[in-house]
Image (cartoon, rainbow, N blue to C red; front, side):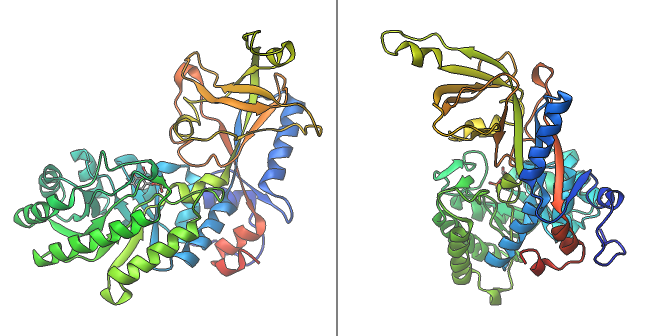
Length: 438
Ligand SMILES: Cc1ncc(COP(=O)(O)O)c(C=O)c1O
């Protein structure tokens, strides 16, 4: 994890491999991830390679971190590995000093294997397999969440040194992916759970919550922070040393979202000031996933099939009818688009080929490559007429994409070309974060 023995010289490909544990292209001044994407596509057209692929800009993750530390200086981010567990992503965040939220034995081993200290890891899954709890104990990882009595009983037996964090339910109806239907104790249950923990000799050190992924209401955070304060007081009254508040994930990953990250940060900072001021000595962490990685990944997928739709001649004239098109591309719902298909995205597909001005747009739909009828990405969008072999570009594809892909029908998740600007890379290695934006 230590910086290599170098000053401002640019790292070699071998050094980059050692740092990020992945092949990473170092981009010189003025080269951007978009330029790299274009050159990959040019190469593909020469070689005839038609496989879908991502370009991922690790510099984007670095800039997000800088933005985080500026807007939420009191909140230590513990990146939610489940969102995108690629080694280069985890390594970048480890180098930046982030902590990690892991959900399983495999994620715990991945992060510990990269040399991250146990203190920088929280096992944030309220219902854990006993063997995974034992694995956490053997890896020295003590902080873990719970929301029920059975979990306390398992932990008392399997990991007596565990430091438990009580996950409370939230009002998360304003989020795209609510979670409190599955996890989180109600406020009424908390007193009982804290008492049971005392009886079992299990240490409870704090409270966590998650306002739901892609939340659109910053006030869910203020409400949950206020609720957490109440549970802290309850815990302290029962003899627990309450010292950690974990405000979970849910932060937007792209700038086109209806609420900006900074608006969330403002509300959070005010609530923390009110309920957990710096003098309280309470350590504050969060578990952002989407925030860090969504905008770093761009996908290029190839049109592998095309079909004109039969249409109702009474409703459409012949021209419109002929141009209502189904496109089939080589990534889909069982690959990188599983979570995206559950969100409400509409106009994300951009044709790579430069379109001439005034070119007509036609009613189009975009389908994945498998034989499943549910493998549909966009049911209705407007596109110029495209040909088999053309490329479609999808931006903001870093969150819950590569981590959810399957091999259904024998397809695999697209490969990833990582890149980072030489300047940002040097700033990270030399720990000169303030120079990243210069
Ligand atoms: C416990 C926990 N923490 C953090 C996250 C990350 O959430 P997000 O990507 O919305 O920041 C998740 C997402 O499922 C989660 O379950």
